[in-house]
Image 1 (tube, rainbow, N blue to C red):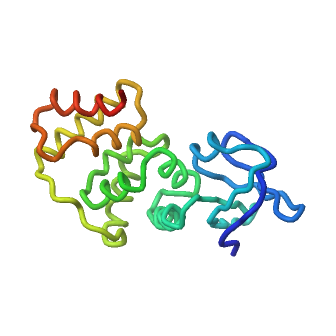
Image 2: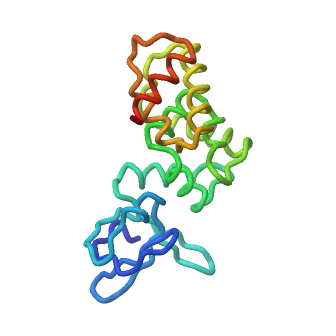
Image 3: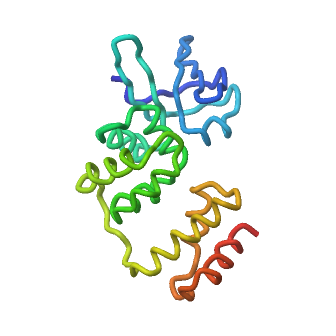
Length: 190
């Protein structure tokens, strides 16, 4: 198995990069933000996972070991293939994925293109005991309101990752009403 790859970016495609390592170009499928930030002829290091199929060998690359390990865990859920797992990591932050699994909030996964309700529930059920960490203490009403804030922010055009980052910046002692929490989240973007 190819565990990591270090080389020069020789081509940037929509969903992947071609990394030149010792004269050989490896096509590596990476999260969307990595493609957007990539620069030609710059050296990059990726932690990789090789998917072997009857008709193809496909290499997936990640900037951190944590992302790669989460990708492998996601592949263990029924209905989640490599492209879907990569889409989840491209759309959601690692913290949000963990939160969704630990708090059993399958609906957060349905915001990822290609992930339906059944697949989202499957991810939560099958990865429940495999995700390490503890859910931060937060009462149920705050979680419900923050879900509404997340919906409002994504409705305004922010990505799920941006919206989640803004919600995490809301002070812990902030009022629990939707309007105030939404205003505080929007301040994060200004």
